[in-house]
Length: 165
Image (tube, rainbow, N blue to C red; front, side, top):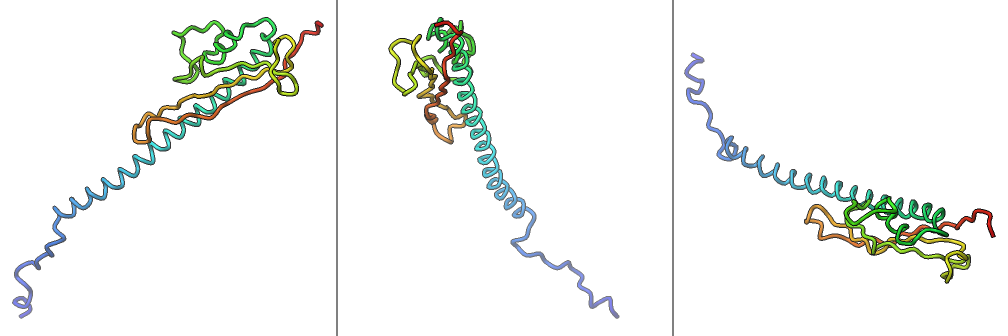
């Protein structure tokens, strides 16, 4: 008696819950999430590269200033600039710069007096200042733009004598 009361056909499914439509919805959701994830990932990579570049330029000015303190009385400014750009006082244009795109034209050397004025004679100067200005940071991903110009970086150190007057 109970047998004829059970349905003989399966219940029909709703039109909007077919597996084909669900797969399409999942694909669209994945596309949105993947796009946001990749944007975030490339943003983190570019920000990390910018911080690495910033730190490397700061370290280059510091190393150049330390080199200049030792070599300034006898050294040539061109050698100091090459040391800042290539970490090699005899660096050539075929050498790799410490940061891609850094050139000798970005670096300046100034000999200053204690009051901050520029010294006319580098042997009478009290401090030396190494500066890097106008460096253009380029993004790898064009989505973020062509690049940005980083601010000026400088390191100032007192010149040391060897005890001779």
